[in-house]
Image 1 (cartoon, rainbow, N blue to C red):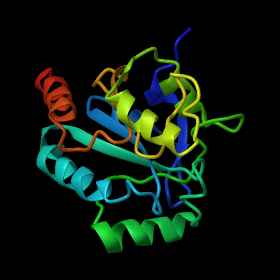
Image 2 (cartoon, rainbow, N blue to C red):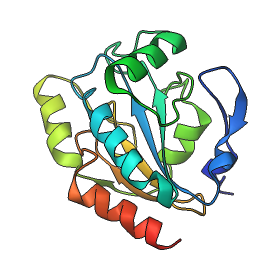
Image 3 (tube, rainbow, N blue to C red):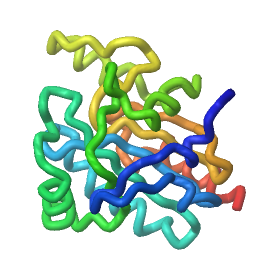
Length: 182
């Protein structure tokens, strides 16, 4: 039986237990984020995309994770302060979780077993390999800032490699297609 990602329990940055069901009927972009990663400047583009499309039912949900070279060492409070003061982030940020390995959060366990192929997977995987970093299995989270697009029905409709930015036409087009299903 497949679990709807909207039904999985998560914790907000302020410690409130909830589910993603509060975003039922909206198009979600779920992103694992980190404050000390070479990809961290993506916060700027993500915030811009969120502000452009939120009135049409679009939400970005950020999940800080410290699974890749210790690039998210901060506490939830420090993460929130960094995101709001450095990038003026207004989209929802959730409590820090693990997105891979034995401690993988149930949300990411469900996302990664969705079977949706990753758009733009090759270049980042090759860059990591050149630095001696194995990307793991194809279904594993490759690095910080991997993105999952969730349709209004709670199903994973697209997955994007970490280096596919918020202004990439492939991502924007997929978001617009889902929003058009209104």
